[in-house]
Image (cartoon, rainbow, N blue to C red):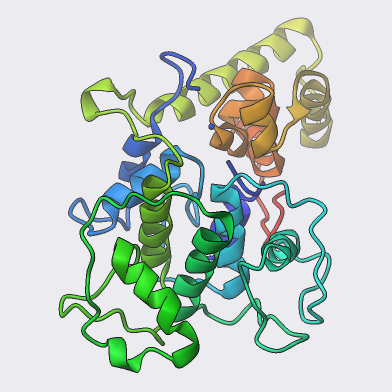
Length: 331
């Protein structure tokens, strides 16, 4: 899940399509080899991908059963709400200022959407439970006064008696708007750790109920997901041909010398842009900066998009290149 966060952080987080160029993110669900065609969370995942709330643990995997920790959940919420958390600070002693989740934890705490596990700790890397998730969402609803129009009828949690006293009011609000997924027996399992799929469903239900995001295009309106990858590959080949034709790359050069020429080309032709910049400045979907398509075709990208673009270029020369990824960066 930390990889999921880092692939989309950037984050956080948040997106107009270039006609004929982008694959609608609804179709991109198909690229995940671990998401069955009949997955119960598939529609919500398509919505989240299309609107740039999340990405995958890789280009081909989503890892639906991975557990979401408290820091990650707050970060995803911040991305969904398109908050500017760059200056978010926190008094929690277990939230390092350099942690990817620190800005959003600080933001959420300042808005009173989240509480700590004590007066000084937040436990950011502890898995979030259903009643904790419900409380955060309820705090957001109550503290902002946002209008909630749920698509689902109210529900009654069969195991409501097991909800902790401090969470009962919040979970009643979740049941009123049917924002949290339940199991086949109608239980919300309040102390259960939340998975990626469950967090995605809950957040997308909230987004739809409060007017956030846009429905992915219908299947007949979509461009194949392969298009953005194909365009990036085609552009990389074009750059390869251009550098050879101009003599900047030629026979006898070492792999290092060739790699330097591609690096120079990127420094001239590709600029850095965050997810928010993609939306606010360029009017694009936020996720474009996370793929090679952004830098190679549009001319801008974030750390993971720039890294993938450079690898795409080196691939044209057969130069081995390995992407490295931490919880908040790719190179």
